[in-house]
Amino acid sequence: MIGDYLKFVWSGLQKRKLRSWLTVIGILIGVTAVIALISLGSGMNSAINEMFESIGDDKIFVAPGGQFMGPTGEMLTSAEINEHDKELIENVRGVEQVIGLVTRQAKIIFGEQTKYASVIATPTDSDTVKLLDSISFYQVQEGRQIKNSDKFKADIGYSFSKDIFDKEVKLSDNIEVEGQMFQVVGIQKKSGSPVHDRMVRIPIDAGRELFGIQDEYSMFIVKIKDGFDPGIVADDIKKEMRDDRNLDAGKEDFSVEVTANMISGVSAILSVVQIALIGIASISIVVGGIGIMNTTYTSVTERTKEIGILKAVGARNRDIVAIFLIEAGILGLIGGALGVALGILLAKAVELVAANFGAEILKAAISPWLIIGALAFSFGVGALSGVLPALRAAKLNVVEAISHV
Image 1 (tube, one colour):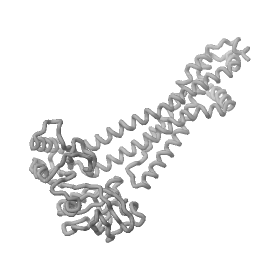
Image 2 (cartoon, rainbow, N blue to C red):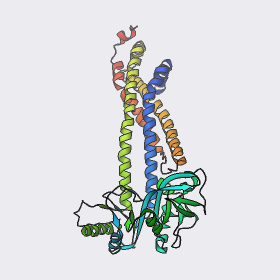
Image 3 (cartoon, rainbow, N blue to C red):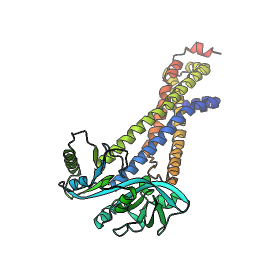
Image 4 (cartoon, rainbow, N blue to C red):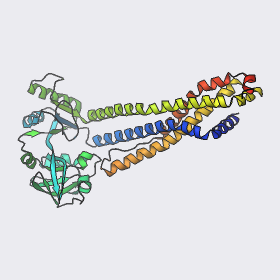
């Protein structure tokens, strides 16, 4: 019986090839967009989670301003954190180590080319070097970490070395940062973070001199002692800084974040953006469903005589309904299958382009369940769009249908 239904449906689609393909396009566009967006969103979310998890769950980040803006601490705010705040945090119970970073955008010259990039100034004592070396953002692949005696030496990000300038920046090369020459002594591992892969890292004393900074910091990285809950320590840090600044709860001009909260915060933002974009893309699927409904209504009209003959030879109303629901569902399924294929290709293409620009954090993650769900949804949209035309076909009078011209 199902085989007969499919033969009948396929013969109808073959007779209306152009109309069928035009109908499929609406579903195809929508599914392509949804598959690409979900794949890229999921991949990016996973990459960000891995990136933050590599920092370790025993770290707390403190930055000026009411909202943490990222692992470099670079943000637009009139608030500041300084040496006094660093000493305050060091005395909080459960804190093992506090590292202060200074971040600025700077003009960098190499050869005859001038570029702008993030410059991060970090302490160079052995304890700081050990902590930074445990964070994937700052691990060195070639050469070594900058140290105490390296006032005008620098470590550079992987992409800064390979992609920023026409000529590759190598170990022992000299780069000019805001008019001061620095020798490259280390090239960091590729982290997947565009900011860290394209940065220059210099000793903090050189950074303060270069940018005219006294005791101000852009961010603190706080390491927690073993056995202490980072969330509780973060709350204690926030309370101490709030009391020191005479601020009420909720009116802080600084932010204190643990790694887990940073992950959940970024994931929440990505989810909201992804849902909004998928909602927009889904409009195409709705339009495609309306197109299928219109095509199925036209099919019912064109095949009225055939429907009458089927009824005359014993076809029941439910058989007629099934035929047109299958036809509408197949149109949706074809659009969905093509959309899945194009969506995967589009997501992978975006991933490759992003990788070429050093944004390896933008990845595509395609799961079998996403593909199965997209195909089932496409078939469902198509079948649902065919319900009203199918019911109309089933209600046709046999005699009138057969005599239809």
